Image 1 (cartoon, rainbow, N blue to C red):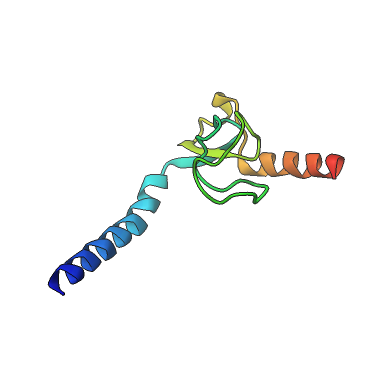
Image 2: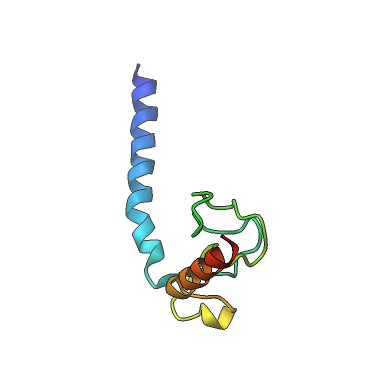
Amino acid sequence: MTNKRTIAAAALAMALTSVVAAPAQAAGKEKCYGIAAAGQNDCGNLAGTHSCAGQSTMDKDPGEWKLVAKGSCEDLGGMLKAEAKKRYEAEKRLNG
């Protein structure tokens, strides 16, 4: 029983560490859309077709994003969320 409690306590500690560390990692970063290689996105996309990192299926999909240093997105050839969302909505109207 003690072993199960130790494992459970360790799992809880890891989960709490992840929750606390996530905002610290994102400080000084911004989401940059349209720069991720296939399978290299950081999380869910604009279309809502997936919600996890590593699930993009094409290079430089304008709906996929990666975290980059704040202020570097456009230099990398990407778009911030507002621009990416406008582009996504426009394409959706044209193709929908």
